[in-house]
Image: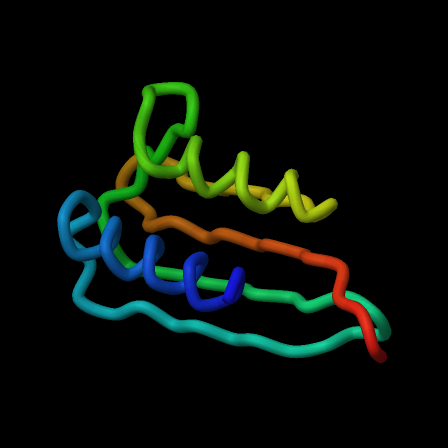
Amino acid sequence: MAAYYVVSEVLTNATKHARASVVRVDVEVEGAILRILTQDDGIGGADPGRGSGLIGLQDRVETLGGHMEIVSPVGHGTTLLVKIPIDGV
């Protein structure tokens, strides 16, 4: 469910804010970690500190014991890496 929410929020942000024409989503399991990497070709400049949906996403990921990294230079798209621990692996 967490993975769905992450990907859904990323696609929503890419559509509403980033003006992206391409979004790449890679999901894989590394040991006991679910790794979600998303990249878009939008305008960049995403900043969770500005009160966007990224704050809620980061809070949700951290509540699950995970970690989120954002790289979003202005004019060069956004890359988001989310790692969430999973049980049963």
